Length: 246
Image (cartoon, rainbow, N blue to C red; front, side, top):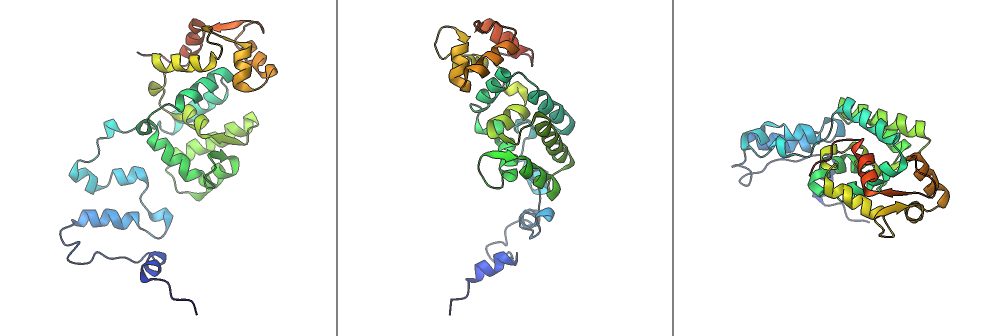
């Protein structure tokens, strides 16, 4: 017959744990309470990341300086940001998505945690079903639930069925992290495939994959289909979305 599972597995499955002596004798009651709340068997009873940071144990130790944490916009503002992003011209969305891939881990850590939680199959995209499942699960704050509802509505309205990591970050990250001169120039250089100092239809075709789409994008910016986008024009286009800092 098969061997019984080790006791540790039995304890984990039952969510049974204790704080044995003498190892835990010097650990504070608040620290033990913090750990206990992270190890609740029922997911809905566990501390969320935000609530964990507010736990008295962190407050007493002064471990968290909220001013230095990555900025995650709250519900209503993020809703409007996401809706605005979905309605942007394709080149703007692509530029923001490219910049998003070059943000530091610290700048997107909060968003990354949220994305991974929703992305149940780990394929790097959030489908409408995954967003709906996350919303129905009820494991998030009211603000995040509002964000999920907005994403579902906007994706459906635009006829999309999924959202990748780059798009998710580009739509939801604090824009002060994105609208910097060096990042705007980096995005322009990414599209300027021919290194001519301007973005042509051929450059856009190389990025987006089809000449038809390239001409459509050029048309969205009120350029002739044979025209080109200078850095000044690209900069002005991006500045419509927010003030660009050094």
